[in-house]
Length: 239
Image (cartoon, rainbow, N blue to C red; front, side, top):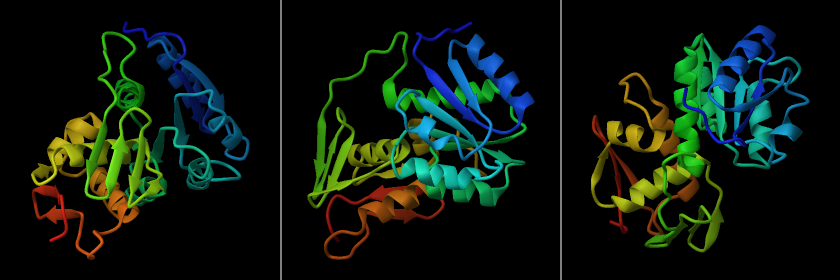
């Protein structure tokens, strides 16, 4: 059993009481501390309280659905959110990523995959609690973009840009590899921390959101170019 240090608190927002009990028991054996809330209306304040390291959020909730809960969370916090989608409906995945989810997992799911997704997200935000030595914070600049890995802040043309954890790590990867084509499978492995699946378009949704937030170069040319059937190219300067 791979226990984590105390303090890794996870909030589950799901109205399926039986599922929550099973997931809670499994996550606790993995060293996580878990709290559960069964409706969306009472969950937002808890989610943005700063008491948790990650939120597991179901799409189908009574009173206020998961998308609206996520919108309200994102208006106040960039805490990592893993969404649970019924039967893996593609429209749910797309909407969830558009609203600001860091990742998604379709129901029913394997608890071991859930833990793997959680650990991948937490590695991006705070590093592994055991055996991981974080690198020294550094600043990356390219053109009018400035990224600070220590504070996880980004500025574009002097204006602060609010990014989710995935978008920040995606931009960092792009800045480090600017001018070179990044394959989709490389981005999935490095940014999402999992093996690439040709049917998984989540990385494309994250790239699309990042592209919109950054906007084009001052001359109107694209910062992030799509390379058909391959991946993406982050341009270091206007064409």
